Each structure stands twice: as C-alpha cells, then as structure tokens.
Length: 175
Image (cartoon, rainbow, N blue to C red; front, side, top):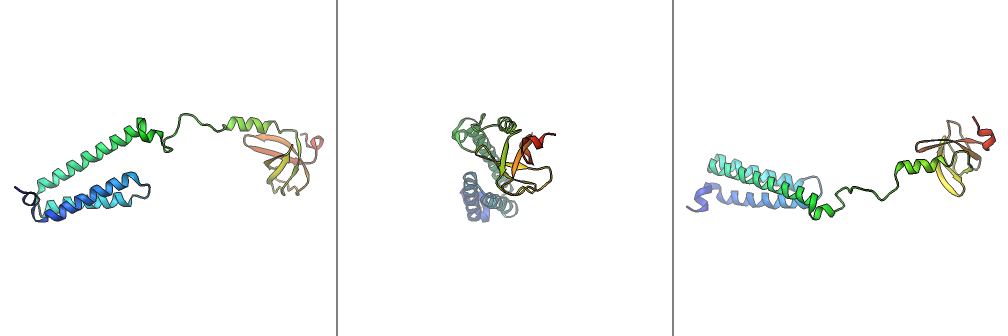
C-alpha cells in the first residue's frame, strides 16, 4: 500500500496541511505575539482531520489527532523542563529568586528621615508636586492646600510611599 492509498483522494492536500501545521506550530513556539502562527497551524490540523473523516480514512484522522496530541504534550514537557533547568532558565523570561533593586521598606525608611526637614517647592503643589530637601528632589503632597513654587515647605508626615508637607518652617508645621 502506498501513502496515496492510505490517505485516500485527499492525500496531497492532507500532506500539505500537515506540513503547514507542523511549520506553524514550530514558528509559534519561538515567536512572541498574538498566536497567528499557532492559529494557522491549528486550522491546518483541523483541515487534515476533516478531510480524512469525510473523504479519506477515519482511522487516519484518529492517528493524526493522536500524533498531534503526543507532539503537543512532548513539546510542553520540553518547554517546562527547559524553563526549569535548560537554556530558557537563564533567559530574562524566568523570574529570579532574588532582586538586585531596593525594596519598598528601605525606600519608606529613607522617606521617614525627611520628617521635620525644611525645603523649597520646586513646582506648584496643587496638592502634589516636587520639593527639594538638602539638594534632593522628592515627590510630595499637601493635605489639600495649594503652595506656590518657591515657597518654603516642611515635611510633617511620611505615610508609606507618600510624603506630606505643609507651607512654612518647622515651627509652624508642628501639629
């Protein structure tokens, strides 16, 4: 028996669609995007199954589905294993166990050091803007009042990542 006898009258179309499906799945594996190649591959695979069910051999359609599922499972196992121990584990796509940047508690502690310091509003605070303290520019906010650019401001509170200021010097800012 030849391949044409096994696949029936749609042998050439079946082979072409199978090749297209495999190529598209391979392209989808290595290209980021919205899945256009994967969708084309899936449609080609569905076309093979439909052709074999209606015009060819239903048994061949079952074999195609079984082989496609086996290839998909083996591909997923390969990708997952590669993400854990292979080349992909060294990729920027995989989250590392530690971070080299500063953490939020460290930044919040640095902001606490500003409480009581006096600085200058670099921008108009309506109610938020930028002020400068000891040569360092910081995002600040008032409790609702507007403060003009160039006015003296004092840090009255550091709430998490937010710095509250009030117009005037430290003696006026005490609550």
